[in-house]
Length: 304
Image (cartoon, rainbow, N blue to C red; front, side, top):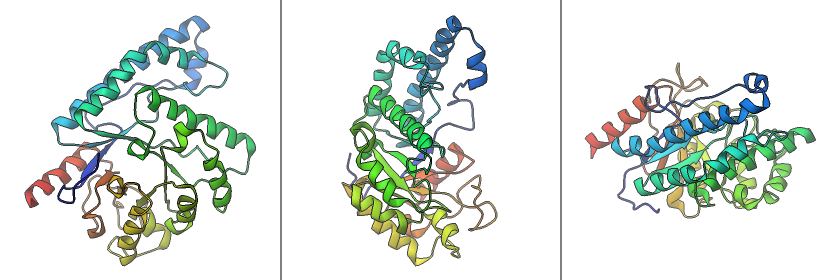
């Protein structure tokens, strides 16, 4: 799982493709609640089975294109986190062999899998009910990774932002109390507003949590001219020191549509900061999905 210094960076595909190859089904809470009790199980059974099959195909899709990093969608199994309805969990119990096969497919393909749960998970919220709900959702994602057979380590990290600003101490306390399935996979990412890397670093150091550095977020947060600012390289190296081993380091790569301060992600990546040239694992957050990743891989091959 470690990377030699001569190995080029692995550019990661985020969740799905623009094309039809990797598309996942969903159902809204309103639609699900409208179903009769007897209809809910078969509805989720069909949806979960379809998404599991598509996830299995993602391993072959990535391998065929030289993609060695894949961010699994956090929305593969809708309704799984419902506290008052165990239907989703029962369906996944039935699909246990299929989920185990997914994990084996990625392992055999040599494709690393990560997950980035949504922004509504705020472990350090000021509201107790939000903290409880967030913890439940986060642990549910960890359970899915367990069911897939993925090891409990940052190799298969679960990436969260810092959450509620000004509550770093609370965040650290919550992290320490997380169950192993979640805590051992957790990684924290800086964002544009609430938490700079400097504000997250003490939490990471105090809890042994890796820091996923995002240069675009850093530039927007600190109002810098661009991703060639010297601080970008400083933070790449500082963040690397939080990873064990350092060769597992993950960073996020994106460009603004209309310039460095534009929060919106561009379709393709036109600027890879030089600070990233020796980073081993780079998740590509671009609207162009596979087009952006494959363009980077092609460019990488032409330079080698």
